[in-house]
Amino acid sequence: MANEIVTNATTRMRQSIDSLQREFGSIRAGRANASLLDRITVEYYGAPTPLNQLAGISVPEARVLLITPFDKTVIKDIESALNSSDLGINPQSDGNVIRLVIPALTEERRKDLAKEVKKTAEGGKVAVRNIRKDAMNDAKKSEKAKEITEDDLKTLEKDIQKATDDAVKEIDQHIANKEQELLTV
Image (cartoon, rainbow, N blue to C red; front, side, top):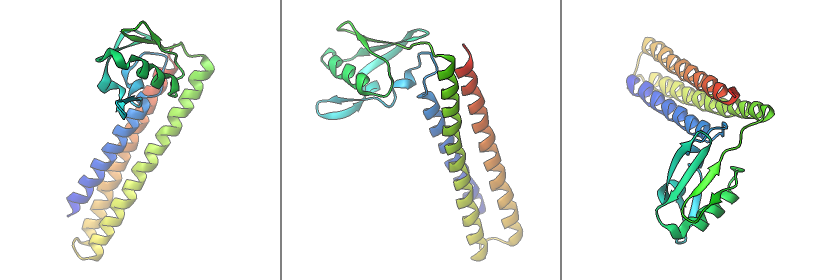
């Protein structure tokens, strides 16, 4: 029972960190990255479809994303989805492919993005702390129900805290990496 609580908490923390990394991937850093388009959906035959299921996305140059639709008839729909998205990048189409040229970031914009990274990461840390709180409550319930001893509870609480500390340390490392990526010209 005790191991299940720690394992469950660790798994949930890992999922929070993975989610945070996906959010970091969608923050534009002045370089072309296919994950910028992960949240873009295109109206395709009446159904919202993720862009990466309708087209091949490649990075031919450092600041260019090349979108090659599998079906050429959907190119106008992809363009309108990109224009209505929050990317702030105008697509350039030649009828067969769409190019997205990522503009270079200004120093001020880089600093704003670094602040956004910290705010996003703080949300991830809060999620990890909430998972810790849930795990601690589960451990205390197990002790009250006489499923584990008081000594086991202390050990379990230490294990949960260690998992939490490790997760927060990993989030801090991801913050540092993303900030370095943003602030490097």
